Image (cartoon, rainbow, N blue to C red):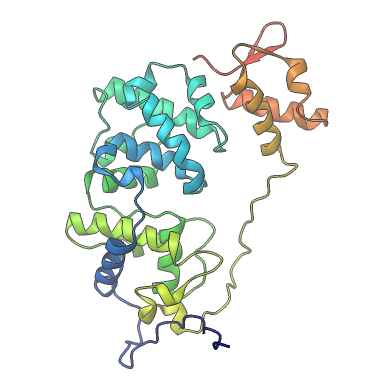
Length: 313
């Protein structure tokens, strides 16, 4: 019988590891080199995606895994290859095409951004960070991500994956705070490489490291290019002692009811009667609350005679 294979061991820290937290300059090259070898081939990273493809991906990837985004992204860009193509459609068509990605208000925001890009910028996604931030539905993260990934600019791009990498490697804690703090933003700015191309590459590389290696549930330190410098690992991986991390539930929630109601409307070719919506959920009070929320959010339009449809305006 062959001896059982030993699991990979964490990369040992060198004897001369500094006692303080690692500096940005010590992290850049290992992480960027790792990214060059291990980055996933994703359609929004290809040159032909352009700034619009990057923007669409950033809207879709919020709180949604890559595997679910890929087919919807490809269908979306085939149908609406430019912002002006989407802007010509009713917002309800964006909600329909969003399918089961979840959090469908993102579809309305993306449609609103496409309209603004068409009206204000001649149909081209602006490169200027301030102009990106002024678009409807665009927050600090998305503006920085588009400016960095699409235009190669120097901006701190702080998504959940990046925040977790920085929390562990530099701050020495297992998880970042539940909400992004000013201290995290200062740290991200301090860690940015000085030149724009390297800074943009660093933003993508640190995000990929958090997505593939330094994950929330099962970090793979033996595959990490900066394990020997990681403050959390060198401290013995102390357990999280901050506020409880928020878990996501779905079954039985208003989100589930909203999803079922929207599914009926997405599949319909015209207005839907109240009776058809009533059949999707047994509890009338929760069903009514979910439907009212969809109307309030602009995702559903009520019509005369107890009919409902996806929004046309």
